[in-house]
Image (cartoon, rainbow, N blue to C red):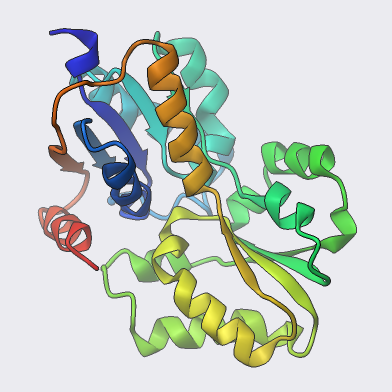
Length: 259
């Protein structure tokens, strides 16, 4: 098969990466995709870096064997733990995710920036290096959201339990001036509107949303062109894989049709 016509592999610890895949389907309509969600082991954000690295590589081996021409790690936690090892192992472009703190910090709007992410992402060396590189650490407020990815795995994004969770996380900053909120986990992308709505009720300031998936998909698009891997004929086919129970695949199909 011509390398251009091979699919792009997407990986996430669960269903969260489908938010990135849905955007990629819009931006890259000629491309075909493989998506693997490690639903049996979600959430990654509370595992050790070694556990996350081993799980990520094991799952991505399947996408590699299925003929992926590029890999996109649609999980900030997996990126932090495994991206360097994966780039050494696979002879193809491997695209990473990272929280969009740079554009949030560059905003000229006044106030601090909330970074909502898993404990694993916020405690990782990769995130610490990113903060050091971007600077202005005093403007960043880390909001570890342990357990939120697990709540979102069922594909129910409007439950009262989720709204209550968001309020609990935002409440400690009531009345503070917040210029932006960084969505630091692809699971949270599904509820960014809810996060912003609750933030604007409880906080002061613009509360603009910054989501790294948009820049990541643009980077993927540029790399495919650079490596002559961009598909020239109509595509849009998606093949789904999931660890764990068969119901996970049904949830994935439901999410792909969401909105």
